[in-house]
Amino acid sequence: MGGGQPKNDFREDDVLSLDEDAVPPYAEEFCAFIDECVTTYHACEFFQRELTQVGYIELKEKENWIPKLKAGGKYFVTRNTSSIIAFAIGEQYSPGNGFAMIASHIDALCMKVKPVSRANKDGFDRIAVAPYAGGGAGQSFDGSFSTWWDRDLGLGGRVLIKGADGKVVQRLVCLSKPVARIPSLAAHFGDPAKGPFNYETNMVPLVGMTSPDAEEVVPTTMGKQHSSRLLKAVAKELGVSVVDIVDFDLELFDKTPSCLLGFDSEFISAPRIDDKLCSFAAITGLINATSDSAFMGQSGIVNVVGCFDMEEVGSALRHGARSNFMQTVMERIVEAQVGAKGEDITPYTANLYGTTAANSFMISADVTHAFNPDFDGIYLNGAAPMLNMGVVIACDPNGHMTTVAPAIAFARTVAELSGVETQLFQIRNDSRSGGTVGPMLSERLGVPAIDLSLCQMSMHSIRAMTGAKDPGFGVKYLEGFFRHYQTVSGLVQQDY
Image (cartoon, rainbow, N blue to C red; front, side):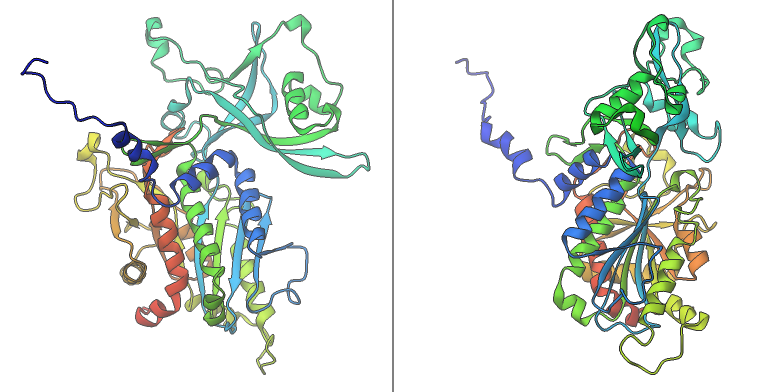
């Protein structure tokens, strides 16, 4: 060998150890969750299954809860099968004691299949969709959906099926392979390829090629609204006849699986991070804390997680955070526990609810922006959170966040007891702030609150990135919030 050649110390073991030995807690579990939960309905079903496996009991809103709710019990309830509230009543709970609450959302930007989706044109089978985001036609779509060009898209959601007995039941569906793509126009065509684009005519996904003369029509009402190929694909996946499909809520989504990214697997690359990241951490933290019998035996509070649909479009409808869902659940819990232990207590009143709300505290857990070194000039100095560095306290003096000084003191005390670092985020004055479910819930419920989150890059892109350690930080902190709530509430008063 020539004397000028550098020595090669490469060993295969050095490379293999990078991604086999250093995967942080919950990183792989979060990726599996994202890949399974392709729609809000799938996420809600996932949480129902996880909660049931550890002893949570499903409640129906139509039922009388008073004889069902017991101190030490664990329960969950859904609305529209797209929003879920889970709660565990401590064995030492008495009416008027506080609720330790976390609120997040499980919807994500997507393309919703229109009620009439037939859109065949010039030999191409297309499917008409409506962008789900931004709060209004044309609003924010150019930025939010510019990343949807040239992606392999899957199809999934819920389907209503009529059985032989005439009853209509709901089934979830996710087609096993990518079925759609929105092709971009090559730059060679000049100005038409630059936009702006018409989202009604220029972003219609292609799903196949067909001859107009050979197009089959299914002889049902749904057959008049949708192509036979769409109906047959859904029916085949569910193992039913196309004539049994009554209706559906379907959407397109990024079909590419999540993965760990980086030389040392420092990142997670995934779709739907906003906000299945914080909702995953919240439910997991609740399960971890309330599966501890000693903790439940000593707890004098109610531990609650609410994961809502509709956040990306304003949190409206009966299953959005702006609805009465959380308030009704809180009131029913308190009412069911009045006199449950044989105490001589006056009946449930608004006064008792007011006491409960004042003794409670809520974390609005929604993702926020991580520092992007390629755009360093747009961040507020000292408030640009980093991936893999801890949870983030989000601030906004104009009411887009719930955070105030006493709440920061509360959150930092929880962090110290839980062994998790905190960071700050606030948008600059020359940028536009986003929002969360926190302000609307805090306003409606009268509960002290803070916006505390995990950070990500590429928010509202079809595919985003977070730190591989961040799911674990979220679980550790939010579990600690439940475990240390009674201690911290005695140290940091919120009645200012």
